[in-house]
Amino acid sequence: MASAAVVEHTFNVGATNISQLCTESVIYTANEQLPGPTIEANEGDTVVVHVVNESPYSLSVHWHGIFQLLNGWADGAYLITDCSIQPSGNFTYQFNITGQEGTLWWHAHSSLLRATIYGALIIKPRNGTAGYPFTAPYGEIPIVFGEWWNKNVNDVEIDGHLTGLGPAISDALTINGMPGDHTSCKGAGVYEVEVASNKTYLLRIVNAALNVELFFKVAHHNFTVVAVDACYTGPYTTDVIAIAPGQTVDALMTTLAPPRWYYMAATVFDSNTASIPFNNGTATGIIKYEGAPNETIASMPSMPAHNDVVTANNFYWSLTGLARSDDPAVPTTVNHSMIVEFGLDQEPCAPDQTKCKEYALVAFMNGYSFQPPKKVSLLNALFDDLTDVYSEDFPMSPPSVPTIRKATSVKKVMYNDVVEVVLQSKKYKTKVGTENHPIHLHGYNFFVLAQGLGRYDPTERSTFNLVNPQVRNTVAVPGGGWAVIRFTANNPGMWFMHCHLDAHVPLGLGMVFEVLDGPAPNILPPPPDGYPKCY
Ligand code: C2O
Image (cartoon, rainbow, N blue to C red):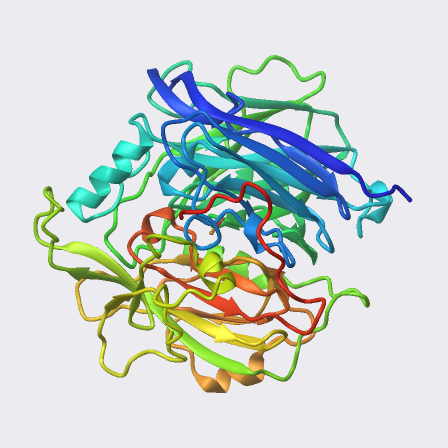
């Protein structure tokens, strides 16, 4: 048995010149890499990352999916758990990885900066590949999807606010930072990987794209999904993967095809229930078998239609948890049974939205449009008992008459309470339709007990999977549909639950769980040295 180690990194976040899509740009990256550095650790290790902010923007880095048990100060959620590292400042994030294995990732959690500041976080079993609940793979292939804008992403975000319609669509989808050879730019970067025949590879797939769910295929190859969001699944065989922003998928792929070159490709899945523009391009990469002849044209997979809801939901809904004997069982007594309705609506343009024409977008959860606090993080306010920073009136169910109120409102729960949430995608009163929304919870994994289209009906309760539901940190709630999640609030702190379409966060598509301290030792300790405070 390997003993726990300390995995240490320094991320220098600063300007990087890049030629991408036939355009010269300056972007902000960690260590001049796109994607940023991969963090590799074993379960049980401690991760230490010194973030040095050499950019002109203030910045928080979030370790997406890491529990941060009794360590919410390191969650890196801007204004929820910290106040961001100022330009020329630095902060050391330190956290333990306990009881999690698989693929997670990290990203900037303040403004659109996460378009270029992100990377994979790979957690292996502490006793090595023998710890996998599947045959150890011959090799591993990281596949990290992103979205690329030719313009400075901060300007894209500001413009999205001024128009009231959110950021413009991206200029390209990327695989491991590169758009591939199916864009109008000849000579754009293409991710290539060499494989041996008749071997099984573990693909570690992350959707770090900002605003789009994706389909992913490799021509002439099948996948066996073995984990999602760093939680093992029952083996699930498919030729197509659907993945929402925030989610990860670990899939085995055996190289049984003739020794040639094959494209991998990613395209947008959009349910088409709202007339919102999206990037309809294709990101490609190439899998090259060893000894393959130099191909002039590799085979391209045939991708599902952008609005192929059936294929997407078939993937999302077919997954089950592995539910090994020592995995936590689904709690059966529920302390808080919530219905949270969310979506987008329109409101009058604000005076500062100088490019806004008819209306501006606004988002809500149970009638509240989440406003982050301004002067102090919620976690700081909780710890220091500050009043007037937030209210504890986040409703258990939607208002009977659709109204939208801007507020910093949290749902308070006691330590170890079991929370069940029916996540209902909803259209309010206007012409803004429904969209798919990947809902992400910080600080916990949750069980996904059931999912469906249309309106959740309480009779669905009889269909809940309480035996081997999938366990995730981000669930792709279908446009106009629902998902039921359940988790045990065993981690004191302030935990953001929000849509992982980046465009929807500033519109208010989020809420926060305030989880109180438990009996000792389940008490949130004071903030670490150098914690980015606001006051
Ligand atoms: Cu991956 Cu709140 O984020």
